[in-house]
Amino acid sequence: MDITMSGYDRLTHIRATRPSLIAEAASRRVPGVLKDRLFLLAADHPARGSLAVRDRPLAMASRHDLLDRLRLALSRPGVDGVLAAPDVIEDLLLLGALDGKIVIGSMNRGGLPGTVFEADDRFTAFDAGALLDLRLDGGKMLCRIDPGDPATASTLEACSQAVSALARRGLLAMVEPFWSARVSGSLRNDLSVEAVIRAVSVAQALGTTSAYTWLKIPCLPEMEAVMAATTLPALLLGGDPAHLDSALASWERALRLPGVRGLVVGRALLYPPDDDVAAAVDAAAALVREDSR
Image 1 (cartoon, one colour):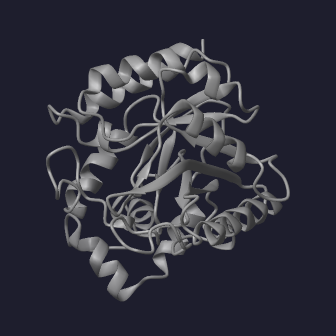
Image 2 (image 1 turned 180 degrees about the vertical axis):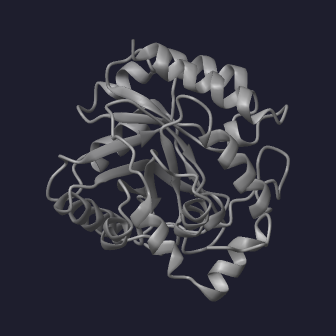
């Protein structure tokens, strides 16, 4: 296709005039190889309106800037793929940035931060059928368990159904569980070792089978106790650490445990304090490669 437009104006032109090219790009994509160790970039935060990074409330607001950072990060050695909502994945497909990469689609983005319905985390993005149609590798779901909110039951049921639907299609189900509670009106995740173990215990039993389930869990100093609670493979989430060096050191220690199979990191690497995306991504990739030797 000959389009003289440059930059990201081309994406808008395609979406306005030939949206079918998204499916065509997905059909032409060279698939990645799903390995037993993975380093994925997380970019599904904007789909929940979560745009802040450290003290920058709108750090992720520019889609052009986010795509620039993702394309650079995906080009670095050792990066296996990306986890994102449909809009970001479709942009990356049109840009040809996902050849040879593992692509995980984010599924439930409806539990918007700060809302009264946050614990009722609706599936508003990918479903299992759409992931299969786009030839993606799996789906990720956030599973926050608030014992004080009846809406948690709906979220648990929806996550269970998604795990089963993904497994029927042979797709990876990446479950991110948290034990949570309202604090001064806001839903907060409990990162105590007891709470994380309890969340992991519930999450690994969701669905009709756990054969295709991986966990996405926070990195704690007590990771040995957390990983003793499961036989499922787990990837460490990155969060939004104040100091990248200390986060890298924590990831390095946790990656020595057999059950920890890699990283899923977004803001910490895409928006590092010094803004050197390549260096931050390379440092994290080195940890995963070193641990796989």
